[in-house]
Length: 327
Ligand SMILES: NC(=O)c1ccc[n+]([C@@H]2O[C@H](COP(=O)([O-])OP(=O)(O)OC[C@H]3O[C@@H](n4cnc5c(N)ncnc54)[C@H](O)[C@@H]3O)[C@@H](O)[C@H]2O)c1
Image (cartoon, rainbow, N blue to C red; front, top):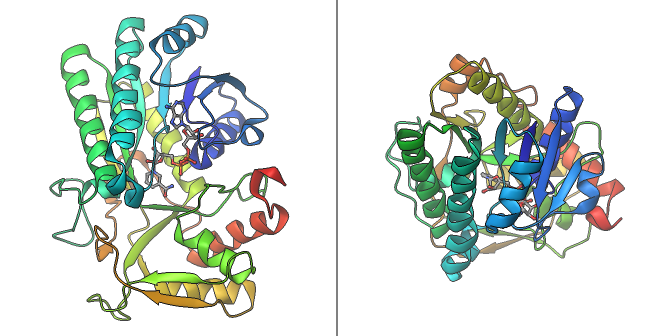
């Protein structure tokens, strides 16, 4: 059985669906701090907090857990600069409690949601996994610390881990049942679509004088369903006894903020109102993955690498769910 922690969130809920479709048995642990009960209708759900040792031990005693997939974290770089304590508490303390509970219960496999934010300002593009880890925001720093914890728990206690460093997760369930519902939303594609749909007056573009062809930041977008597939391949790899490792998950292709907006305009068929604003502190200019290692070792090949498809899947879900999971 797979324990999906944070399975009611954006990526975790897609993962639960993916695993169930492949005949895996799944239990979700979530405290619904940012996730949605409606996103995990088909799974066994334990409501509880990752930082609570008693809850964790109860889950590990009650269910025969083979592997943990750990999605639960606070995720916004900007907020982490204003409230680092909140991020250390939930992300770092949560991970420590989880690893302790795994050690005590003898559960020895974990797949961890890491992030491109561990790299900071890249020294080379595309970014390989061997690039130095120098996060420029507290969120990225908590993930770097958590990766370190996985490493040392592996060395000392034999817990095998695969840390997956996602670049920008995007899109929605290709079947249209699940989508992205962060409150407040800070991710570019939903914000662009909300501006296009009239749910917001406009979308802000932070910084127009970066050293890029159109002056706006460049990011690598990866479809949420492709992320799920990579997790599933990582699970097979752990099952085969492979040692701990780290993989980047991205498409190896960068799109500027303005390119995302122009592509969204084509998808929805109307202009999107834009407001130009100052640069934000801690935003790297370019983040583009080398996902060559995941392709080579996991045999992972993204099915939905096209930006327009990601935007289209997101848009379809927002049209059907104008109030997100409250619709
Ligand atoms: N969304 C992205 O683009 C992106 C990019 C890189 C990495 N990640 C990582 O992927 C993971 C999932 O991201 P997401 O966008 O799905 O976030 P999300 O906020 O939608 O999901 C997080 C889930 O974890 C739950 N949770 C949080 N703290 C908890 C706790 N203490 N106990 C129990 N449950 C808790 C929340 O209720 C929510 O259901 C995160 O670890 C994030 O850092 C996301």
